[in-house]
Image (tube, rainbow, N blue to C red; front, side, top):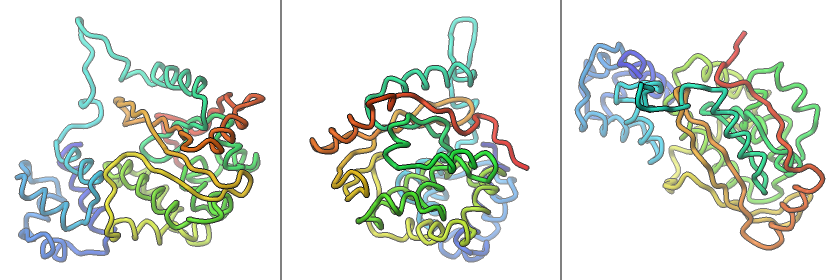
Amino acid sequence: MNRKQFGLLLATLRQDMDWTQFRLSEYAGVDNAVISQIERGVKKFFEPDLLLRLANALQLTTLERREFFLAASGLDNSQLVRQPSMGTATDTHHPGKILEKLLGILRQVRAPSFLNDVYGDVIAANTAVIRFFNIPASMIESAPHMPGGFNAMRMTFGNELVGRTHVSENWDAYAMSSMRSYRDSTLRYRAEPYFKYLMKTFRDPSKYPLFDRYWKRVSSVEQDKIMNSDTFEYDHESHGHIKYLTTGITTTTAFGELFLTTYLPLDNHTKDVFDGLLMDGGDSVIRLAPWPEKPMP
């Protein structure tokens, strides 16, 4: 992102803490005029110490810090990927080819799996993961008609309580892990109009009663997350005690990353559950959220 976009990102991160520019300058040990220059996009060079002070003051997690420093590079998504030329070939600029490859992989995965983008919108999922979470058909049918309808946060924190219902214990750990992953993947996009469009809905307590609580808690907990993976162990409402690991394939594109997430069983019972979900067409794939276009009213 360019310097103006980075300035908007810093302002968004600051405002998320309910801080003024002066308060951020105090916590970071940086002159208030420098904060103002960054947010207005007029400061062209960022010293490493300045970026470290800002990341520390904003209480960014390890994976959020990585995204923050990448945002400060001054490069946008289209520049981060290999550039096509006479002597080189790349599909990173062709969304149709990218999706075709990833959907082909998704159809072959022998476990619950789904594909999502940097905003947390689920682009496609195999029916095994839909059955695992007991997602009702009405929820999928209504998704195109509401903000964040296809978003993973709706499944976890929405007032339909799909996530809360299927996790009968260890809910707090489950919710924290889900929110950490969401904050990590979205950091560079927090100032984008589409993300703000989503957050307006996510922070409505009548629609997402638990979202804001966990959004704020992630940066304040003592234990940091250092791996782009999570281990979940809980009693499932339909399948009993299960234990699995989330593992992902990250695809870098000119339109932002795509994440193919798969649940790997960590005990024999969970393996049997996942195998059962894949029977009778559980490996078929359903297209969901649009990508890379993000329509807004």
